[in-house]
Amino acid sequence: MNPDTYATHVADLVRTIPRTHAGEIGRAARLIGTCLDNGGVIQAFGSGHSEAVAMEIAGRAGGLVPTNRLALRDIVLYGGADRAELTRYDLERDPAVAHRILAAAPIGEPDLFVVISNSGVNGVVVELARAVKERGHDLIAITSLAHSTAVASRHPSGARLCDLADVVLDNMAPYGDAVLPLPDGGAVGAVSTITSALLAQLVVTRVVRDQLEAGKIPPIYLSANVPEGDEHNLRLEALYAGRIRRGS
Image (cartoon, rainbow, N blue to C red):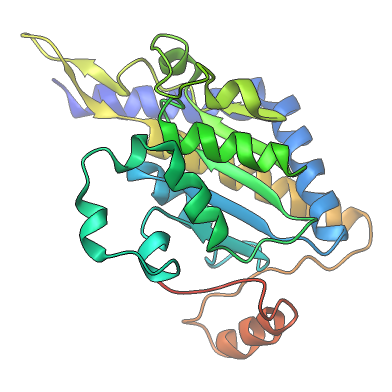
């Protein structure tokens, strides 16, 4: 159980993913570029630890301004549900919750969705993916193909997130996510958050590169903790008034 072994494993993934996923990263970036050109917003959803990756996409320094982070708690914050509902053990597995999240979100026709789920099989994730595709939106998935293909879907259709997306970015996390096996079973040292965040940032940087090469000015956040950061960010956010929300 050597932390250096974990660090080496992660470092290998960080070196491998940009090379082996270049095609998918490019396709995802082109979809997002088209979304931005059409005045759209990137809607990012992840539940559990995958929400950390949605935060990597939406509303952070060095990231794109026209972004929203969708979450399970939106049914309370924006949908009027009782806070106690968030304690339901099966909330992430209930497909109906996906429609409540979407109903409470400021979604426009040109918007694109990025859905993050390591397993890619829970009811909310799959139903949300199904719903946005039925509405005609482009969909990028960040998931573990090794895990997703090893377990049964928890959605009544039997579909997985990876079955529904226009572009699938495989975070290369193993079945069960953790990479260092324990003597009596199980493992420690999860990698999906690290590799999924890496994929998200690789796509964003590719989008920005493509926009700059096309002579466009990408709408990028500055850190709020640098001089004039607030002024810069508020000016850009005003261009998407009523389209993006910032909060918990």
